[in-house]
Structures are given as structure tokens and as C-alpha cells.
Length: 141
Image (cartoon, rainbow, N blue to C red):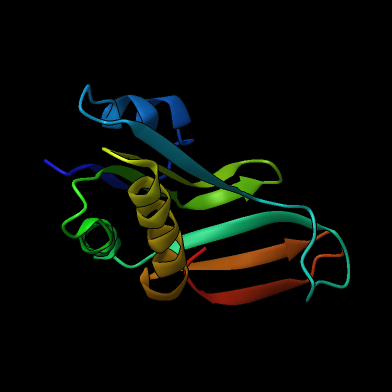
């Protein structure tokens, strides 16, 4: 099964569990990506203190499709999750782990997944600033 995990979660993301899910004796490469909540945004007037993520009910199916399409014929294996709910600065919003026979495919699949999450995953975020200002940001995280 090339997609071993594709989850939308209210719980904190476990990066080690993602890496463990893609561990494979035939894989010569593993790569990972963790997207974290940062304390600033170019559009924010004050410090960012939280992000509040919400998802469409079909988001988990969309996440699986994104992973499957990124894998294509590469032979890669993927574990990917996106967090929803209120996240503080430093919390992991996205975790991706990819294993493949060769490093080029692992990097390509991982990057394709995160870039496609940003444009196609039906997850929205509300950015909360220290002065109480909030702003909704489009698709993805």
C-alpha cells in the first residue's frame, strides 16, 4: 500500500509515527517535511499567536488522492497528516514522510505533496495576531 497514512487530525502530529509508517527494507531513501506554526506573517501587523484550521468533511479523501497522485509510478511510500483545530506557535500543522528506492523520488514526492496541499486541500486557516486581529487564509496550510 503506497499511502500508509493520510489523516486529518485534531490531535498533535507524531513525526516519528510518520517515519515509522514508511520504513521499508527496499527503500534507500527517506525524507520528511514538517510545517510548523510561525510567529509572524508578511501580511500581519503584529505577532502571530495561533492558527485555527478547519477542514471540509472530504479533506481526508482529498489528502489521500494528493499523496497517490504525487507517488505516481515512483515506487514511493507516503505517510501524511494535516492538523485541524487551534494550534500555537511551534505546533506541527503538517507532517509528511516519504520513502523510496532512490533519494530523487523521495524529495520530489515530498515536495509535490506539500505544494499540492497548499493549493488543493480543502483546509482553511484563520490567523490570530497578538492584537486580536484575525484573518482567513485560503486553501491549504
